[in-house]
Every structure is written in C-alpha cells, then in structure tokens.
Image (tube, rainbow, N blue to C red; front, side):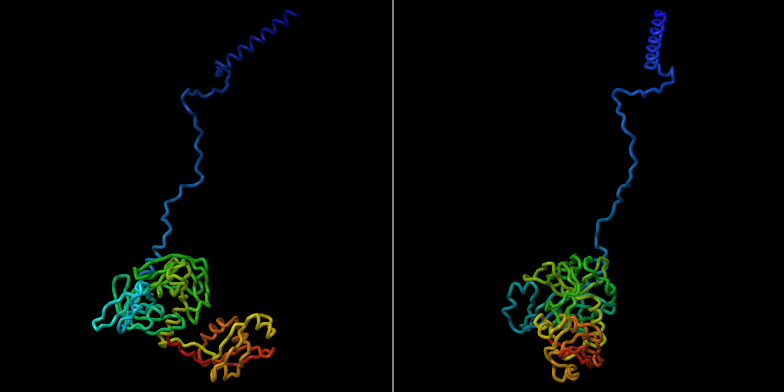
Length: 388
C-alpha cells in the first residue's frame, strides 16, 4: 500500500512539473494569454491624454486706438494772442516762456501767444473751451488735427463755470460724440486729449478718481470729475473721453505745486458744459437764479448756539438791500433748511439748487427762525454777471 502511494505522489509531481514547463514555454497550447513581445531598446509610452482646453486664440493686445481715432479729430489746438505795449520784465521769466511764445510786432509792441485746447461739439463749428484759455485775448485761432487753421470767433463765455464757446467757419468738421448723462462712474477708464506745453496733440490715460468735486476754489460753480489721467498746462479746454471715444468732460485744471501733473486733474462734466453752451448760443450769456443773500455753512458752534439737531442747511450771514431775500423779509440768522421741498445740505448745495431756476419764478424756502419752522415765498432774481 505504501509503495502505491509513493508511485502516485511521484506521478503527480511529474505532471505538475510538466504543466508548469508547458505554460511557461508554450502557453498557446493551454490557451493562456501571451505577453506582448518587446524589443530590448523600445520604450513604451502611455497613450496621450486628449487636451481638455483648446489653445488660446491669438488676440490683439488691449488698445484704445479706436477711441483716440474717434475723438482726436474733434480736438483742436487754440492759440490766443494779446498785444502788449512796451517790454515787460515778466515776459523774460523762463517759466512763463515755456507757456508763451513771443513774436515781434511791426509797431514795436509784443504779441504773446497762449496755447490751449478745445473740442468741436457741433457740425456748425461750435467749439467748447475754457474761459481762462481765451480770457482777454485780442485774437483767437484754432488748428485742427488735419492741418487746417482758421480764425475763431468768441460767441460767449461764462467765467463762473470757466467755459467759453468759439465758432469757426470750416466745412467737413469732425464732431465728437457725447456720453449720456449719468453714465460716468468712479473707476471708468478715461483718456485726456489736448495740447500740453504746446508739443502737439497728446493722449494720456487714467481712470475717473471721483465725482462731484467742489470747494476747490477754482470756479464759483464747481462740480468736477476728478481723474488721474495726466493733464498738463495746455490741456485746458481739451476733451476727457471714455474708452469708446465719447466726450465725458472738458479738462479744466490740475492740482499741482510745480505746474506739472501729479495725477489729480479736474474736468467739467460734458452734460454741464453742453447745457451752458446751448444757453450761450441762445442768449449770448448764462443767466442764473439769485436770492440776494450770503449763505454760511453751519458749524458745530452754531449747532450748539441754535440748539440744532444736525448741520443740514445754511444760515443767512447777510442780506443784500433790495434783493429778492430782502423783499421776502428774510433775516440775518434765519436758517434755510429746504428749497421747494428739497433739503439744503450746505452753501454750495444752495448755490447749485438756485442757479438753474429761471429769474422771475417763485420758490419756497423752508426756514428755521427762533426755533420755529416757516415757509417763505421768494421771487428769484437775476444773478449779477461776474466780470473778470
């Protein structure tokens, strides 16, 4: 029995060894899968993974060339000349010579030429610029971007807003497009186009840094757009445009202690400038409403003295004799809280509220007098013209 078991064990061992040899050397005999044959010097790479993101398309670099192309032809260089008798030592100042060019006059006088900018806003040849650009000029000439030059006629000016309207008689004028009122926002990209330092038409870029800037001491009526687009001497009267090339404002002033741009420039909103231009064209001047009183902002000391609840409103510091306020029996010390139901924030606010009111109209002032509120009807007068 033992011998039979040994024979069986040896037979099984021989069969298993034979099966192992067959599987290793001839796997196809038993249907086993074959390993792919590989060359010793062949490297098998993994299959490429399909790209998930398509290659970036070739795009044109960010540019405002189209905006400049749209707006620049409507921006002109303004040259104003004034004849001066004799020689003035001021004309020899090197700082002034940067801004003024001097030409000898055949009659022994000097003719100074001031450089500024302007914007063509109407196909009939109307040009907006700053009043201080053409102030006291004996002659005005404009140079267009296409090389044409022409004498310009002064239609009218408004020193209180520092605006003036010129007119040239030339055909085929490029007229700037305007942006709708209220679309300008802080952070919008803007371009300033003008003729700084007389070097020729120049474009600078920035953003709108602030809106409604006032109390700067530049004009009587101030509602400026602030921008960090470089505005230099000679840019005055030029265009501030948006990224499409539409007129946003008229460049007016810079904040600078050296005469160069420090990134704080101011422009009159286009809507304000166009409204003033239309009135100048229609009437020859700008007529504003007037109350005949001097308003004063309410200070913390006045709040304590009058036992007020807030600093809203203005206190009447003086009343002009025979003016609208005097005729309505308003008194020094009265506090104006409202005009036609609208709250008065401060003296600048009252000035801007009464300015657009047509002279002759009646307005109602909400007044605080001796702790009691009352309504006073006032017939608006004509604001006296400021002559500079």
